[in-house]
Length: 421
Ligand code: AMP
Ligand code: GLY
Image (cartoon, rainbow, N blue to C red; front, side, top):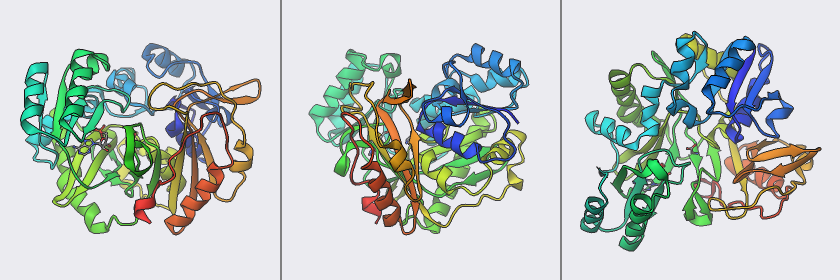
């Protein structure tokens, strides 16, 4: 089966790496891909959001399955457009993807279905939002409702920070239309985990819990990013906790989603805080996480192509998900300055040496290749992943390999997984 994978980040390199291991895979195309995916298939110069061009490519090349990586094509309705033309595609419809693309939609769904989440209010009026923040006081969390590349959230320790965040979103419009509506919510205290639930609209399969590290700097300091490193499974997450998440969050969410927007097919990825009062939802995503996918693909024993085909064919119930009995860790190497402005175009060295180390796979994210030289081309540049048991050994291996790779301005967190060892 020939496959088109949409996206060009670390998540897509990890998906491509895993797809490539399937004996059933024919040709693999990645749109637009990166310097890592070009080693595994053919990168094609179509943007992830150019839906007409993607449809044309799929029809012309008789692609058997299209897999959507990032959120924006989903929010634009790529799945609806493909289905209208009887083209097989992995991902939720535009209506279902609202659970990620509109925080206001997600919050309303959680309220209706009684799903545990932070208390919140939504605002479109700046003065009303300001008055609310002043009444509630800090700590408090201010979020742009729309998609803002994972940067639309400010966790504010003081009232001044909250007022500044509101001003930036609603007066200065730094996130443009994504900030027309603002969600203001209670600060939740506890460790954050990522839950991935693969759904075909009838059955679902929960992956082991993963943990991302969202802040740019060690000790959860600095700004929120797309994610600076992941581990899975999370050693302290018990089967009882997973069951509680399934019962209080996963099942009621799928039921409410089905009622509101039709059966959910694709990946449902709630970000959850394990509070003193049980698991509470921070946000929902309607796609694979990045860099969660990098650790999941290292651990998954199944043929990924079989699994994703089963979702599209609604036969997921027949699949038995199997995972290596080990831990995986993925350390993100970022450009200096990320998530704010950063320079790119720097040569990356040490990739080959790192890639040869035991249990190491280096996933590319923001990279390009020009005349045989791999260069930085984005904020998150690479993910250095390793397997090991216990978790500590996976982390030690990943860091040893990460230290072999160099580029100007390279930045990584040194404490990925540290709280879980
Ligand atoms: P979100 O995009 O909504 O997941 O928010 C990004 C990050 O901000 C999360 O991964 C958390 O680390 C943090 N965050 C968001 N909402 C809250 C909250 N209510 N309490 C504590 N931390 C939060
Ligand atoms: N790693 C978090 C996300 O993909 O949204």
